[in-house]
Length: 115
Image 1 (tube, rainbow, N blue to C red):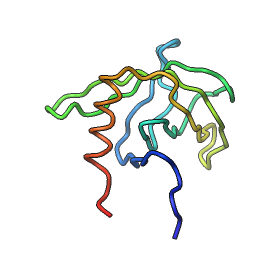
Image 2: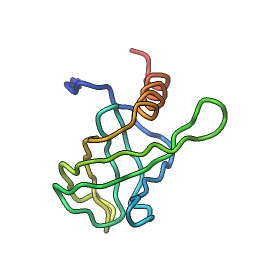
Image 3: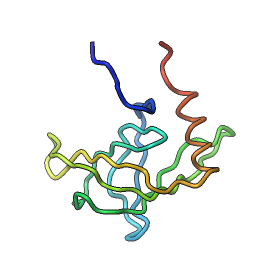
Image 4: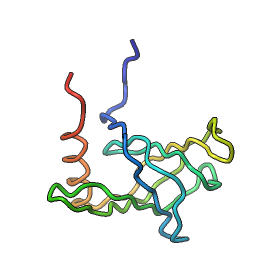
């Protein structure tokens, strides 16, 4: 059994949620998992390790629509994926405004598997 020692629970993402680079207005990959403090992305674009990015991804708003979550992030690490020209990228959130943080927390909490 693997014990999760992270401070914030991570939600595994079963759907294809695109992650946008706000500076280039292009999709850099898709969300793999997310917490209130960071996220894992399967990236299809080259990323610079230890770089800062402004990213955006949509989540359900709880009313049948979506809300775009804007985050300032620090790329902590990246490693090649099994798919050619893709990599796994681990990001730490640096900026996330309060309404987006609260919406993200509700979405994560409402979708975590029961223990």
